Image 1 (tube, rainbow, N blue to C red):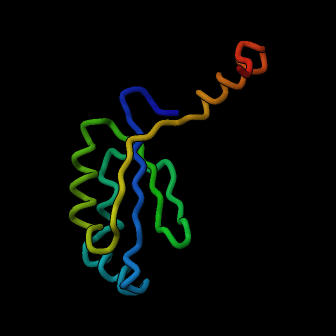
Image 2 (cartoon, rainbow, N blue to C red):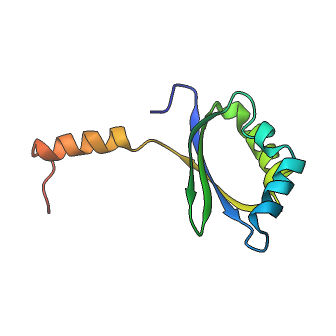
Amino acid sequence: MTEPNTILLTIILKHDQSQNIDQIQGTLAERAWWDRFPPAGVEIVSWTVAMGLGQIVTLRLPPDKLNLVNIEIERSAWGVFTTEIYPTYDFVPVREKIHARWKAGEWTPR
């Protein structure tokens, strides 16, 4: 669930397949990626690897930290990953409400 005054941000870090893992990790190390990302005040909600795609990172942050996330992506990730960034939200509570209404017969097929 998203905390009050925070947003969720999902970032897809697509691997640059012209580089091998040693090259990728070397560049990330040179740029201090693992220390710099995510910036202070930003929480990692999940960080998964999708083989053949890259890494999918979901962050929880106050809206005023969005620019810091963007700067760190530009500073540290570009040239290693291509990125896609999406504002997201936790659908589980919404799904549960819809399911409860469905079970109560409030919604029927048309």
